[in-house]
Image: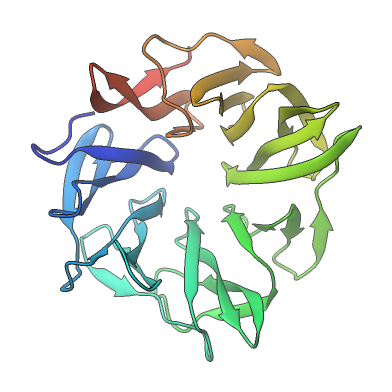
Length: 282
């Protein structure tokens, strides 16, 4: 997956396999690169202040990019926005009384979920696409992700259904600590401390535990049973609950994701250079 010259890429993320996004450049030339079937499009930062940059957090199935302007240094700021498929930018409005707001994920319908500080509490916030009008404040919660049905996953591991009901994810047998890390492809993944070992965990769509895997942390999974994770900054792969071999060189740490096309999109290091590619798991 090529990148524009002089725009080194850091972490890559995305959805489906049709699109992927990453922060490109650096403090002098921050930008977002979006790939569609491996072909890049570069979006320059909309910031006028050179102390601000706009890292992407996610991309929808139709190519809408979710990003937020942040400060390289100094006081914390959050100015969230989306880049529509035609390149138009739309700001995501703060909920009334919000001191800060942080979007985290977008689904294929373009709905964005995030969190905001309102009324001295952390609130769950939803912006409905493609209009992105005033956000809905759904109650207290800290968002992790949203699937195409509108189900939201919150920390530490609770499903918020479209009808407003909440259901906790099941705790693996023997776990003394559980951390949910992502909600890609409608599949919750993370890790659990079991017998003193941090082990990767995958949950079913109904919240029950699907797999307790080997040592490491799961970062992304698909409905087909492919799980991408990491351990000690090295990538790890499981398929159908069993360890699987990664390509060499393979994904670096937690810098990528698994797609529903059973591929992996991530960065890898080659001779000190950071490259982005898509691997087939077939």
